[in-house]
Image 1 (cartoon, rainbow, N blue to C red):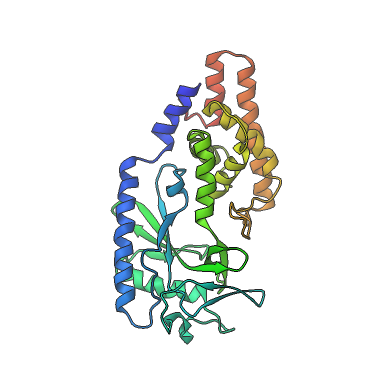
Image 2: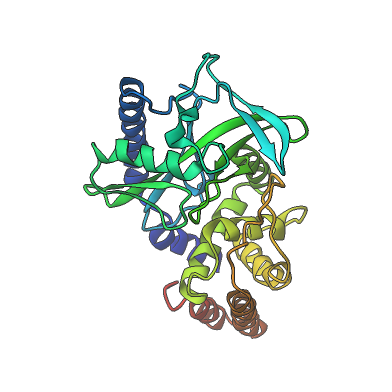
Length: 323
């Protein structure tokens, strides 16, 4: 069965290498344009040059075809800014050491006199739109999507401040989204480090399994789970376990998903909110049912120990696209 899964992964799941390469070049060009425009304009947020970075599924290598987005963390100058949570000062933003900061101007402040993530997003989108006309703030309000017409994918630009916290160490504030002025903590570096460490232990099976489970989520679960949620569930399913094949890894995940989906899924870095905060109870229930049904199809076919029937069982589990 293993060759069929590998072939499916290569031909129908993994994105084409050329488009991944083009995405890398496009985001580098966007970085340069943004840095130039923000530096040249008046009363615009300044950047921490050299601190911007890619994150998310493209970096973890778990994105599946069609390749449609790259996530870019745009770290802004945090000079003169402090982090507050629940009315308490919990850290300081990393800055260029300037005696003033444009984001402290009234146009960027909310009703409480705090820097508004929503207003920062609006302003940066205006700057981007002068060069990329198809740039919109994503529906969740956490990123500005810059669509590349020529290549058929987008770059999600996430404005952020790097925070040196008293207890949480270095992390990032990104927009809460959903029309909120607030910021929330995250640390994509911690997410990536945890995922890569476990993937290396498994000899790259973790990453490949995440791609296959993302495809399962698309074909057999109506995309009810976010891609990051699937990656996290795969990570938790396989951490500390020994799996000797891609086939066994996928089966382990299908069984583990049924238990893991009954509870909230934390970010790797431990920050709130949970990865699955937007998952409805009904979608959670249906995802558990989908994992159970898919697993039953495969295990039922494997009971017969006939290669043709086993292949048919896996094919049914992946909506007849496997072979």
